[in-house]
Length: 536
Image 1: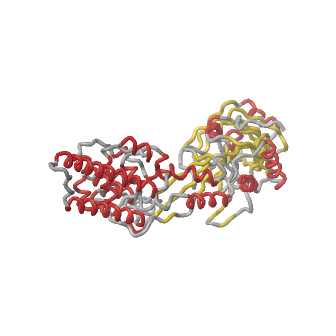
Image 2: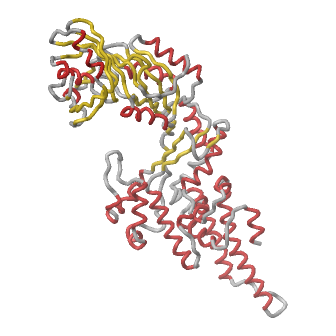
Image 3: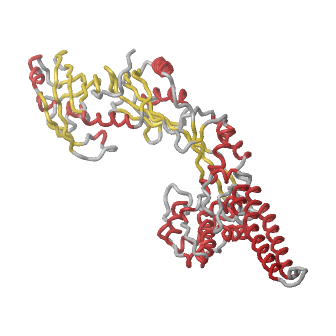
């Protein structure tokens, strides 16, 4: 009989589950939460209409009661003397009828009431209407994606209610000597995904809903009515709840789980009812949040202006320059990828009055939450052209999409690689061509550079050793010459020339025995072989 019933309802339930089912239904659990506590891991079981599942759970537990009654009656009638079988005692019939009526009442209540554990999430909040809402929210954002991952954020108090119900069931299991681990109970989050993934996929035209994807669709639920469920844990396990800057509440899901692991059953039951109290309303679904992982774009830039900072120049909240390298490059890229924001980085930086020539300086941009994540080579080429025609102050080359891992190559080059410069030098004392030729012979000159005064507000005070690998000179007149330098990355060129009040030693003033200053500086090359060059 039991095997026949099992094949009919397709719920993988066992005899030992019957008292648990009875106990949970009586406590006010929904049908799907009953399956969770019975450790049913067959996903299809959760996708069935909850009313159907409830009827079958009811039939499953009453099947035993009816079978028991039938067996007792048969035995009695078989043993009874006389031609007429005796009638059932009135009390037994009344008892059976009343128990069936009570079960029916509970089922009708269950149909109307909000589940004491999931707070309605596995009831009316997961089904076709909710899937339509999620799909509509995704479509409205106009993302481009091939797959998506569905994430669910639940109120922290669900953990407390789950624990309460677990303790309610645990007593029954102990009495029946049944060994079940709490970890085997299916999580609300998992059951929700099993039910919703296929429906969301269908509403989005068959897009695969997977466990890992570049595109995440987040569903969040709140339940203000039961927020206070967690509060007793703060007094019983104060160590688990530390205020943090970014969190609005100390009662995070992680903190609550940690507290529930520490608290004893006796102490928990002293502060919280088991089973939990009946809520008056279901959870409230919040706005659907869509998020695409960052896309990284890299290239090299030239800067031709001596009045353009690399990044927006703000002093005391006021803008000092109308634009920057970062903004001129970022604006067209943000538009093409439809990103919410960006982070800009480069292999070193030049001062506002320094040009960057040659092959340019490597840069990379992290595009935050891009609604578009792929551009063809032709589209990237067109994007590069758009940047280059938008301003005569900068130019980019080798524009390409790269991986997060590849970006580390750029940062590695900052300290390890070499950079070449050309500087226009002024000398206070008049010079002849022969006075500067000795500079051409200097190789691997080691400098001790104390943090320059001009950057002391943003860099720690320290003495840094840097190497000038080689220099060459080109005489112009009695007070001017061009100085070419190949240096270790991170060398302060201006400070090497004027000495920075003796903070850089040795310096050009000492070498020429004359006050010297730098009038113009150009970066000729940044020797980082990244990103890969793209043929024109």
